[in-house]
Image 1 (tube, rainbow, N blue to C red):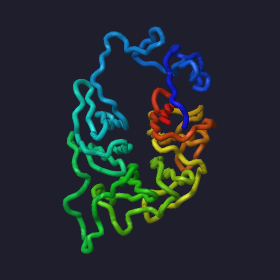
Image 2: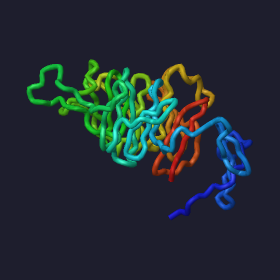
Image 3: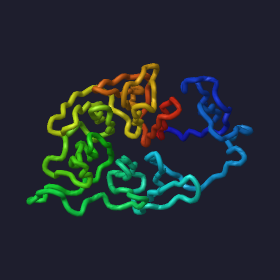
Image 4: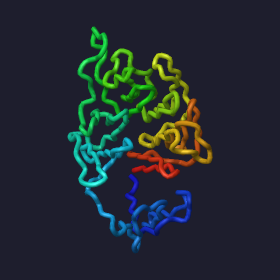
Length: 303
């Protein structure tokens, strides 16, 4: 068992632009920062700048914003986090430690953590289910979405990863219904690690790498394995068209996605193209999170 890493003395911002060039000494506890926002380094300690106050003592994980609102998970609760004031509990009794996935569609936010699912509508967390299927269903084949652990929105449907399968909701905006007899793709290899909608298809990460699922009609989709390195769950960052001009010096002409694998950082492009934009050994971690902002892809890993 590896020993705990204790970093006790901050040296301030590092001079190197590469993370590998920053000081991180487990023997002395000295370290440098790649970025510091609204903090000062005083005598080796990182402190908030004067005039900035802590809003609450919550330790949030699995943060998500639909552009207007911010949500996060703390312990067994799902919260709305306002710009000012105390966070508001939307739903309690969730499975602690289960990573939460989110997807925003219209004015609703759907969430799932592999144990529970739900929907946030007009600021209220409710069941993700419909009252009555709008169409013929004599044998009851259409039911509520399954409890999945990853979500994506593509081609007017929500795609839901459950174990090694990807289920999808009905078309025509029937997001509360899944065909229990045919509303899923062929099984993948091991547990689904990633669902990334890019252009006219989905990148699906599994234990054997990444498969590009091309098309918008589930009955006509094609499947091609485009990468052999398995993505790290939680490392996905979507790059919507127009928000990011380039990645690693290459211009973007549409949607894209960035994720990490044990061999480095990968870029997924329309048409199923995948490029490894940075080669680096990245160890598997128990929890991983990522975000693309300010022209950077930031990866956070907890051993």
